[in-house]
Length: 291
Length: 120
Image (tube, rainbow over all chains, first blue to last red; front, side, top):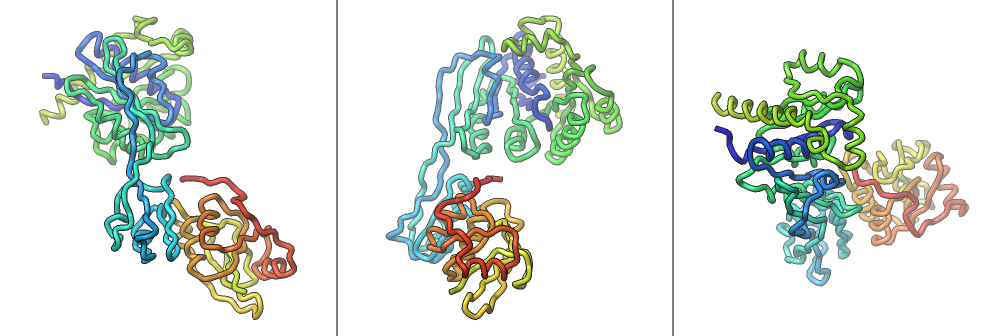
């Protein structure tokens, strides 16, 4: 039996390989042909799934994190707060204590060790979570405030918008660092999107290292598959990694993309590919649950 | 007066470190006697973030009147400013040359960061 709320994360080492193209079309194909689906845009530094899905936003919520605020009248200047901070976000210069909100990871350590209770929490807005619907699928996205760097805590909030009775498709940020880990870590399956170029291969290797470290099941999707060389296929075969879907370099896709249109809407002959991708993932998850 | 100089080595002949936060050593020089002490700053060389802030705090704790370095970003400036440490900028030269230039008034004191911050 297919579980209703499986989580599929779409990631990539390299940027611009087609994470949003794959994740938006996958979510749409699942909802049209299989079961309820929800798309979560966790690429909160530059969310762009909305360009293609054109959702109707029903609710927008400001997201805040706690950062320390110091009452200088209560501060004894002991410096314990600055000693415990691993991120150099709070500095004690005898009686002057300075805080650097952008460096703070909201661990609360400074507040705990302060012997005079001079430190309290202050809410700092880092961005927004928008929740809505896009035709037949659920939609949520995070928008990090410009200039802010608190990407992982905002991604965590986007994931809290996940519906319990839909397949969740997570559009992850590029790269292999903290924001990506936050986006994919509790997924049932990861799709790694790449392109057949030396850059695509180099960054795919990094992404494979990341998902193996996290012990997550995964497969590769090659976008613009006939545009470059065969090195991705060679690498995947050597590493025994499944290539679950190849999408060829089709100018019709590029044209649709440039107009903000979905592949499954304007080029229906590609729809089966996305539905098959879901069936492949679904089968894979079921097999793993059995073993 | 006591001046801290960001340095790549442990003596007055070594080159100054143009990077403030990630300087390997801080040389605390008495400009009257030319005697100096070496403070190791390598912890910050490898800091994930906030190296300028931490180095600024180290310098504040050295009770110096001024610091000579190559570049100072916004967070380091904020820390040094709060600690009332004057900041003088120097170009590539030895620690001794930097001290001499400061004494002869050739180094300019800054009242703001001279480079942008970098978060990661």
